[in-house]
Structure formats: structure tokens, C-alpha cells
Amino acid sequence: MSLMTAAAAILTIVGMAAAVVRRGCSRILATTSVVIGAIMLAVLVLPGFSTVAAAAVTVALLVPVVGPFLWARVKTGRPLAGWQKFAAGLAVIDIGFMALALFLMPVHGAGQPRASAVPMAGMSGHMTHMAAGGGLMGGLVLLGWMVCAAVVAVPAIRRRTHGVFPHAVCSGCMILAMGVMAL
Image (cartoon, rainbow, N blue to C red):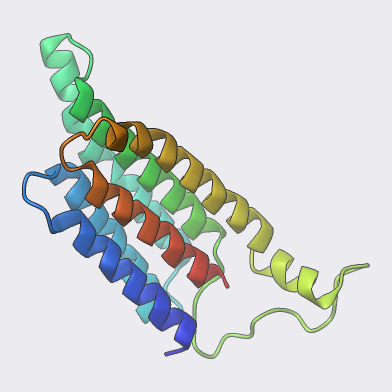
């Protein structure tokens, strides 16, 4: 296992632990974080694990996560309350960006070549690696994920909404882990 893989695995585990460590945190967010973390660990640990399959499983996670919120909204006819809106928003952001990042990430494997040794037309060797590994798009996806998670989490943290900080730490660790995996 490479140093980058170990670092990404540790960040993933820390993110999963942050989501479940505090009593009273949103169970939906905690469960979502654990499942997303498990998918990330599978991509890291199992050589050749399909990132497309991992992205598909992540997108499928939207149904059991968003379903209860939609059912409650239809049943009561009222919009989501503060914590429900935060939990649903952060879960959808994490799931959506995670699926997109997994889809763009190259398959992780021990014996896999890093990038083509022959530069593409007019590109330097570094740019070839970025283009082959989805570096630029992956970086933009991670940056977008970070901004969206911050837009949802920072106001809730400033209002001292119950249980928000652990989930903000979890999202941050997952984003960092994806960044390390993309290197």
C-alpha cells in the first residue's frame, strides 16, 4: 500500500468516525457518511475496483437518504425544518459530489501505470498526467464540493446547530481523502 493510499484511507476512517462519534447527531448523515466511507475504502483497498460501479452505488444511496425527507414533506405538507433542511442538503451535496469525483477518478490499482509516457499534442509531461488522471476536472469537482459543503455547513456552525461540527469535519476529511486519492 502506497503512502498516498494509506493517507487517504486514514482520512476516510477519521471522516467516518467524526460522523458517528457524537450522540445526537443526525442518523441520516452518520449513516450516509459511513456508507460513503465504505465505498471509498473499497476503491482504495481493492485493486481494480470499478470507480464507475462505486459512483453508481453512491448515486443509488440518494434514494434511501432523500426518500424519508420527501415522504415527510408529502405527508405533512410542510417544508423541511432547520435541521432537516441542513441534513438533507449536506447529504445530497456529499453524495452527488462524491459520485462525480468517483466517476472522474482513474481506477486505483497497485500495478497500474500512472499516465502515458508519451505527451499528448503540445502538453508537458505534468499536463499529460493531469489530463489522463482527471486531475483538472477532479480538482474542480473537489473544489466545488468544498464550496457547496461550506455554504451549507458554515451558517449552521455559526448558529451552533446541534451536531453540525462533526459532519463538517467528516465532509472535510472525505474531500481531503478524495484529493489524496486523485494524486
